Length: 220
Image (cartoon, rainbow, N blue to C red; front, side):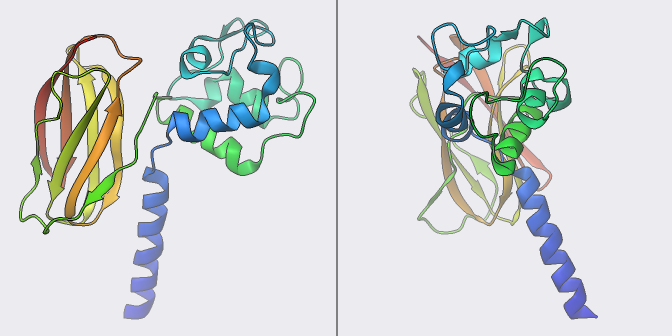
């Protein structure tokens, strides 16, 4: 019985970890577009849809749909997702046109990216080779002020789910840097704020029922 419970617990942990992984736009989503959607990488794009950069993707309006092709937080409301995932979309034909459809894995990656809020860049978390900490802590980012990249270091003492998010002064979420389960240790992560406006930002670390908030300044 104990063995069965341990197997079940391991499966649940793996499932939770898989769901928690944050999709990175530059290294994952843009790579899919660049490798498979050549007809939408030109200066004008096809039917007004441009997939050559994050800014173009977020701001593209599907002329047939009459709205932006990405609805952050909802793949179901995003015309682009319908166009790549359905063999019979409401308008036109399945994307990419003139080539093979995207793989199930690629479609799922784009779906997860949209459902997670269609954020710009998430840089991988790096584990630092130092002794295991005995408490949760969050260092001041460096450099600060910064332009356009800055680094964050944090330390966790217990295995658990960790969240590190950035907010503007109005409380709007600007980026999700960490959103996953991590073992005890010290970690670093970088934020590329090239698409964010200058100003003050807050970053919040949450883990195991505790949280820390610090302030930083982006100067362009």
